[in-house]
Length: 559
Image (cartoon, rainbow, N blue to C red; front, top):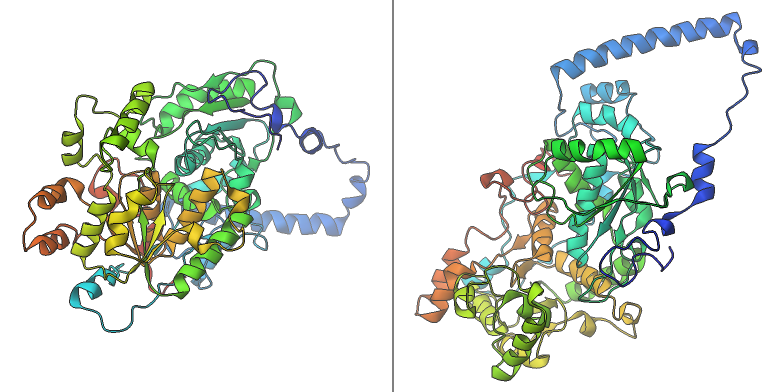
């Protein structure tokens, strides 16, 4: 893809055209304007044996359609174990499942090429066992939550799968989405881009990644994600193309970037269907958190399919991430800690860095020069922000938190995240209590990270892969990385993650007692990765809480 797209200006300009780089005239011209086959030999085929065969085929077809009509009236949604081109595919099938699948000829099959969903999942390494003499507290710390038998279960309804035959072949209407922000913010927008394409029954052009104004990362989609895998996994749901056909390039292009929050599928159709039908092209920008968290079940399942199956990282990133994960894993169980101590975090959160007045002055100066980066609660000072749980935990607070939870001093801790503000000084309190602190720079050998220098998204992706295989994951602050990791670990088998309850525990930090450890463990007993339905609270993201839409109980393991 050409580097002239969405250049460093964070505002998506009209010159040059934002979709000009998507042109692939020869490919799409051949698809749209392929010559019709000549009918001159048609009459020769209409012999009596042929007519007899055609009659038999029509009879069987009508019989199949009548059964399908009965099935769709009596059962809109198939059980968890049922296979389909848009469902999780596993070896065991009941006779009724096989019959329904064989009769669903309206659904695109391509069985020989259809990726098995269990294999397409970006799965972590198996949990490393904890051995040796450990205390009761240490045993509790490493112990994994009870998954209660829940496994991934993308059982799309029959209505959804019937519609896929038409939607997956769309060649007239195209959706272009510009994803902004950091890696995981972009991932959320890509997920919703696929869902919106499905809602509008449009083909989706591989999303454009906007230059990150903070990290100045110009990475394109194909540099971060595996494009062919992305297309292949979703081919039964939405048609995805690498570029626009020449017929859809226009001198004037309208860009829709004024989308309100929490919009429904009905709003999407009412607002954009007419425009898409008239122009054949819709360009959307600023999608972050705009689509409602409460969608129909099939669209929630599609979100999970995109997030956990389709968005696999590009081979160079995935391969290096896997190698570093194995190096971390081979030495024993480990903790992955998403430590948010970067300079931009302190600027945006309105909090103090705990590094002293000299560093606080630097943050205050940056905040004054970029007031637009401060996120909400403008009337709160740094003390109130901290007590409200709006500040990242410092290295000292994380060290005390880990000790209270029962983590052994010898525990190996992988630090995910960017360069901490203050460098090694910022990490000293943590290293003093837990000396086995490791980063990707320590794990890498012989220039393995060199291709990704100054590529923040690729480095964040490597952090993600290594964190996914940890025995325990802990985010020190809220954010997209932690939310997606929480859902991915649940989807991959409810691997332990601990969300610090900062609002409840910080007062305990201020008034430490002999019962400090017991209080902290009690506060976090029910937030360690146990199955937690999204429906317990409204507006939860299915990517963070994949139960119940994307998971169900299976009699036998599926992975």
